Image 1 (cartoon, rainbow, N blue to C red):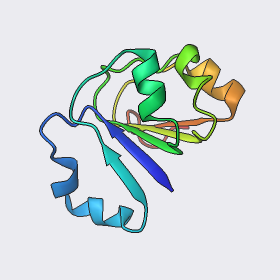
Image 2: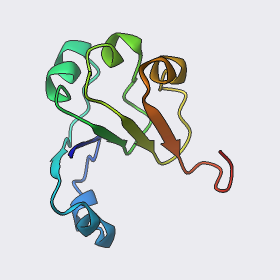
Image 3: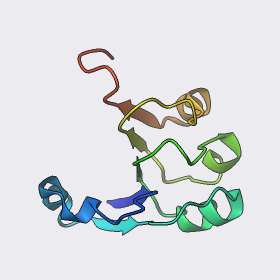
Image 4: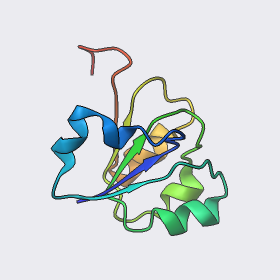
Amino acid sequence: MNISILDDYHDTVRTLGCFRKLEGHEIEIWTDHVQDVDTLAARLRDTEVLVLIRERTEIRAPLLERLDRLRLISQRSVYPHIDVDACTRRGIVVSSSQHPGTP
């Protein structure tokens, strides 16, 4: 599986114990912040799972329409920066741990 992790400024995700659970997958970690849709579309073109560390990168329909392989977005917190309706139309699951125990 191709997994992309955005906005890991301090490059700390790979130091977490749980990062080992991703062994065997193709992982790309981006430590800079990019908002340009063309740049993001190029970076994420093969991404199947997108992990968002921060709420900084907008994931809107113009980008989602260019990410044919994307199936899951995992977000740690709130997600006002994600176009959930566009994700739903494209069959992309948006997962957040904002409110454990709720759908």
